Length: 310
Image (cartoon, rainbow, N blue to C red; front, top):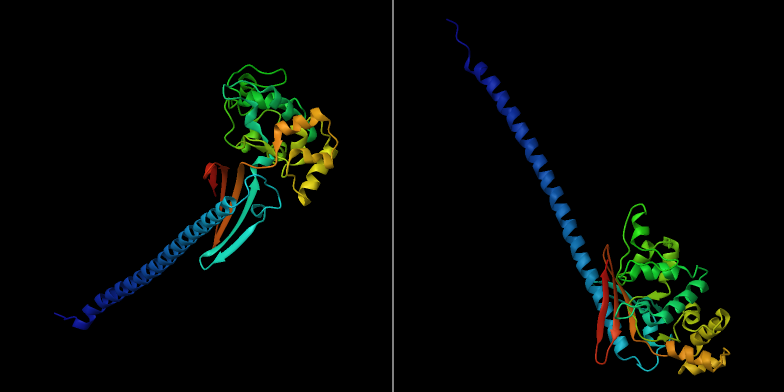
């Protein structure tokens, strides 16, 4: 009987062991690479979250600074000469912030179209029509805007209610409530996105007091007073940029208004503001946070009317 040397029997076994060891080493290396990759990804995620939190804190610090600026403001007269009208920037080790404060009382109060009992305010409708005409838009859009926000389904002569919206593609319904955002303007029949964007520059959903003569646009002033031409309103606005009005009657220096016109303007405008829009941007690392807040000045504090963070 022939005997096989022991080393010949062991050779295939050693080869299999070697292959197994090499495979295990390759697997270990792959696992190590995967762990390193996941560790790096997790580290990046943690860094991004850290930056986001820091950016939000910077944005909120900017908002707090804006409130401090408004707190020391003269409540009797607000103008573009005031400290609140100047942009502010600051930086810390954690990041930076930039803050702007705008006068929401400079805009036409869209919610004034419908009163607390749900009835149409005829005077506000006329003012809205003047605003639309001054912007080279059809005055008939006022009917569509009113129909979109009033509670009933009875259309005005040039308006549109549920039956018209349900025929659209895609079909939808009018809000039948006050707008929650000016973004909704683009949903109103007859108003495209470009028109909505232009209208939004002159409208507010949050200010219900008098329009500030010192900060309003010419178009809003024309809406406030039917006796004003756009040219006269331009002169009023130009004067306000260099010398604030301390009383509505001061517009007589640059615009000719009879007693009825001055009364009408005085009924809709003033020289102080009640509502402000604070936009605070916080930046930290790769994170960029925008905090928009609308506040209303009250006797001893500022009440938040709207807030959006993005």
